[in-house]
Image (tube, rainbow, N blue to C red; front, side, top):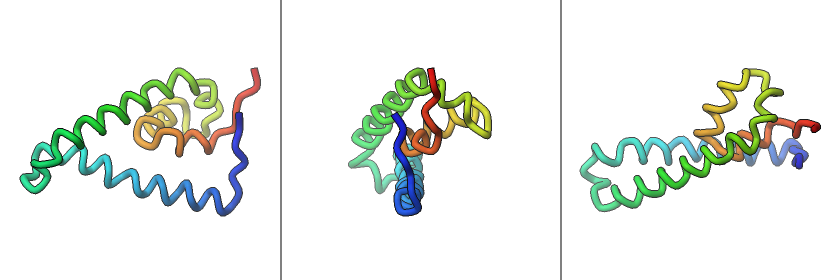
Length: 95
């Protein structure tokens, strides 16, 4: 399954990738910032849920990583951070 990404879709994916970075920043900083104490448990649980979902994406889409210009390790790390928004950049491999 491959999604054709035009200029508009590429801009949306880039915007979504940029919005994900503050989420991971909040998840990582939640235990250390007193202002986030009320939301600490929620942020940590949500971060763990998203991370596990991204872990499950890796074996499902590993064939796409082989076509990655940066190599499979870079594609794996970026998938752990951005998930499907990163995977949409790679074409589906032919079996």
